[in-house]
Image 1 (tube, rainbow, N blue to C red):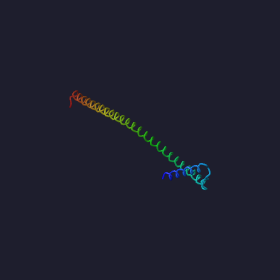
Image 2 (image 1 turned 90 degrees about the vertical axis):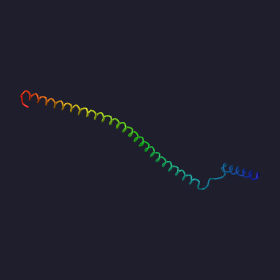
Image 3 (image 1 turned 90 degrees about the horizontal axis):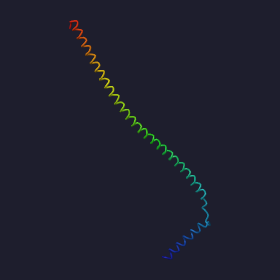
Image 4 (image 1 turned 180 degrees about the vertical axis):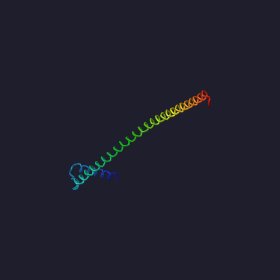
Amino acid sequence: MAGRTRRWGLGLVAVALWLTSGCAGPPDDAEARLAQLEAEDKLMDAALDTVETRLLGNQSKLHLWQEMERRHEQVSAIQCRVADEHLLAIAKHYEKQEAKARQLSKRRRMASADAAVLTGSR
């Protein structure tokens, strides 16, 4: 068994030396296969470039949408704050107008009552 393994190892060494010595020529279709592999390599590179371009485009779109979302949240927060302040100002304005109307109505009633007292009629 040891002799058989030794012969097998020597056989492999001999084949390796024969292949590396340049005595064995390439197969007849080696150049055609090499050209085919290079063409497939170029097609694969082009396909990968297309995929990479699409991925980078989609990534930039994603960043754009994330930035738009962030800005929308900021603008919405500002708009809500401004709307709240505006509504409070409107409410205060209406309160002032109602107070003025009540005061004006009171003055008119007082003036009417004074006129009635001065003229002696009711």
